[in-house]
Image (cartoon, rainbow, N blue to C red; front, side):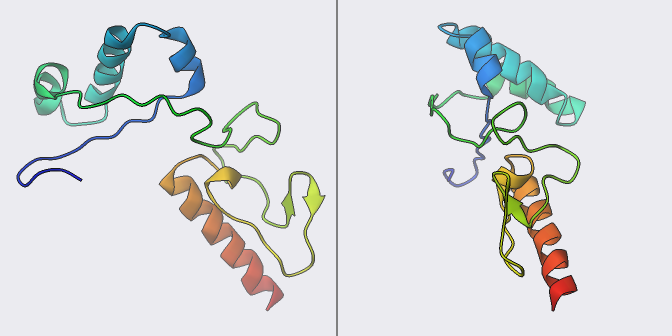
Length: 124
């Protein structure tokens, strides 16, 4: 994804922040960088704020499933159950998992997969 001896940092910004910063890409970039400084060791703060290059900005509508307050919101504490989807029970032994069942992240997808695997093991 990045040229040799380089790195790429990709950031997803949810709709509420996108709406707040609508038309203000520079302010959105600054706010995202400020947030990122809290994710990395403090010795990288100056690089994040002043040296990282913004290579692109892509406004992708509905790029991630609703995390909270949507029609079938996921949650941050274990996600939804795996034996039902959109309010309908699944046939016995059929389970659903993915980032749409927990948080819309790789961790959420993994967490959901583990939960579905445990449920499948109980049926076996």
